[in-house]
Image (cartoon, rainbow, N blue to C red; front, side, top):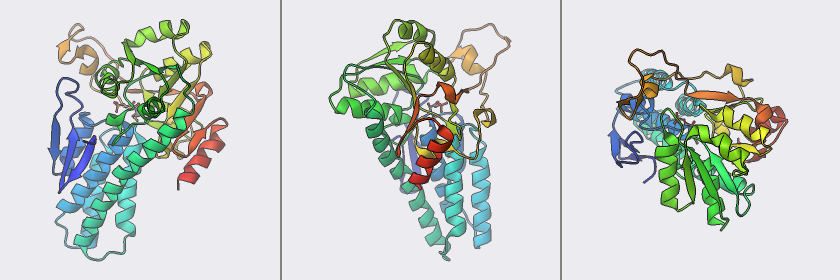
Length: 346
Ligand code: MRU
């Protein structure tokens, strides 16, 4: 199934906290449940979070007992505020909430039941479009991959981080389908291990050759010429091309530059935030310190130790070779070329 889908008034999603040991489908029938699923990372990855937010709003619409349009819009705004408080860095969350609110506010449908149905259809469109966009990104990015290339990736920007197909893994899937022989080095991605748990699982299912490494091995392999290109996703790209992505991405970009290999971020245009001028303005989520002191529930540090757990870092645009989108690859100057792809997507 898709990572997330709407099924007769229920949102069904693959529980990413349990993979790869268990494949469990969770069901939520109210927006509070969907918000909890986003916060606790049962669903994660910027585009998947966006789709979850859209379906959360659809649930809020369906469940609203409002009798007037004003009450109905107030219910939606309340749901949007709650869902918007779950994860601050992934801009797709706010993009999807804004899209759903805009649809409701600007609709000329007077009958509230019909408006409810229209919002469910809009959320479904957010999900369906994501899959189409990922395939277009995959095709655009696959042009960068030549036969025999070795790719290094971080975190999970695969089907699980989207509705289906993936951004970065979409590029790998497309290149693999074109018959190009690729090999992927997968960073385990501490603290939450999205690389080891999710990316490794997806690539193995797809039969794409890969090697799992710990994050601190990346420099070793890159410096020995084992990596030709670094491909990552992003949770938010600022107007100047600064890229916020999973903690550890910045170190990879610096390593790539030092060793003369290209560094690309693969994102839908909904991840490009033209309202945010530079990476300094991107809010960085600080997550539960137990993610650092524990691995899958097992303590690994002395009790009471001081901990930091920023979930993302910002890679300055000077380290970014290009940004692959569904509308083509944006190269520097990013201020101009990112705006161009966003405009094209509209
Ligand atoms: O904390 P996560 O697992 O939601 O972080 C996900 C990432 O950092 C991904 O690289 C990003 O969202 C892009 S997903 C296509």
